Image (cartoon, rainbow, N blue to C red):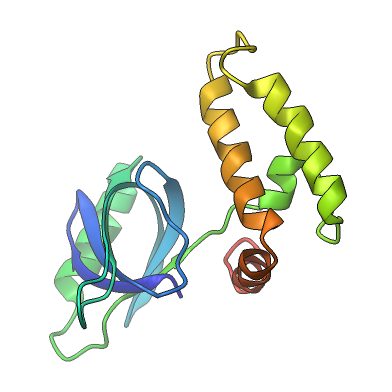
Length: 167
């Protein structure tokens, strides 16, 4: 699970994050909002992230994107139909496959990932590439390598990937 919904509206969601949730402002995520009578797959961009303070967990705000009229209607029904005693809505994020981002197998060695990262970084660096989306792709490749090169983060990511909507 990604976190607990603190507040939800037709424009966005405030979430109390799980301690191991990997998230950064600007990330676009597909996630599930589930209530007592079912759930919805929604897409949102992380607008803000607030670090934990004392007993208060880390929190983030997601601005909803691409709501079709049908999804908007279903979300409105989910918001209005939730009884006060119902358990909190759960938010589960679809985890992006970082191995696919680097173009390596899930059992790839550190050396294989390092070579793949350096090849992609040279090709996508904004100073070297004329592609409009090179900076965004370079950032994504860098984040993927940052997670996969660290054995502890990689193990946590693999566990999260195994339990995600995408797996």
